[in-house]
Image (cartoon, rainbow, N blue to C red; front, top):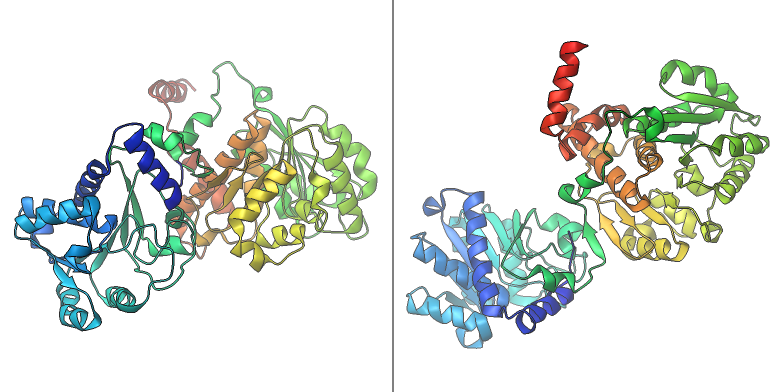
Length: 532
């Protein structure tokens, strides 16, 4: 689903009117009605609630005027306040304001702090506050009267529902520029906007409801948005189908190069993640000292013990064997638990340079290129990097704080410049493509901030790649399903106790949640149980 800015939305609105003949007044009418319908879904007993509708002078206020007219028509009591003079309302909003006036429902005008002090008691008596003051086009921080209003609304005990975006946020950034209403729900139109999906602004929006107002999809598609919110309905068809007459060789063979003394768990988690993703065969290439323990704890995984340094890390002398192991594999993951030992770093760089299959680089696989990201350019085979902000900072020669403050532009620029796919992990993980498109992942929770979680993700992605899934699809599916498995695990055990193995255990349920089996598949499974 495309994520839009306010500038893009304005162009889309103009395109809808000029090319498709859908005027602003029609969209405003539909918007106000959709807000009412959403309110009714949020609270099925609106007639018994004290509803306060706060209106601005622009089109956001126009949507609120339409809402109040429909509240009136349905016999739902409300109080409306207009911040400004009625004479200063223009265009489609003015048409809807005049309709309210003719119904005897003219909003109360508040033009200064004194008038607001007199009206402020309405907040305490309200059960539901609708924020229709400012829309997505805000260009500077709110100050003066409206800053006071925002502060008072945030202190109120009522449920707050924002129209399009909470007042004080801009539709062109995900920053919080100044005073901003903290909404419990936000009803937005056509597509989510930038502040709805990325922190910190996203935290002010509460639950976001995206509603249709009759704007032609062609008008949106013509905009060519380069930001996208991952959606299950778009991802499910990307999962490979398994034929009845298939065998393990049909689902790929992944190589996982990982582990070091004291970090064997990272290799096991990544290898098991690849198997959970549906990969037919997985071989883990680990230091020889880890091989025996690996076999006893991950019986489904084949292992290859390689020469190791005195510190128990993969030695450079293992390169010929690693290159031989790559033959017949469909994808390779490099990095979990490797360390940044100089020999291991040189080994990683050489394997990445010479690999002729898709590569997933994580953790110390990424760290091997710290300060030398240019070495990743020019690969003819697909490359996916999955760094967290610290690893991304080392790769770019900057701080993790700088990465966090510029996640979106940095991810987009790196993927485009190095012609790779970049998964920048964290809250609302980003998947950036070489074409400059960025996908935002809505799944995941704070419980996943635990050791080994990223290793599981690496395994999931390489396991999907090995099955022949297109590289962008593998990255998107891996990130979404990883977060979904984490959400299911947190629902079962809670966030604080969650560990990486819980994510692995929940992955089958996540797959079923994304793509439930078809009726004939369920029938086949039942028949197999009866005859087995």
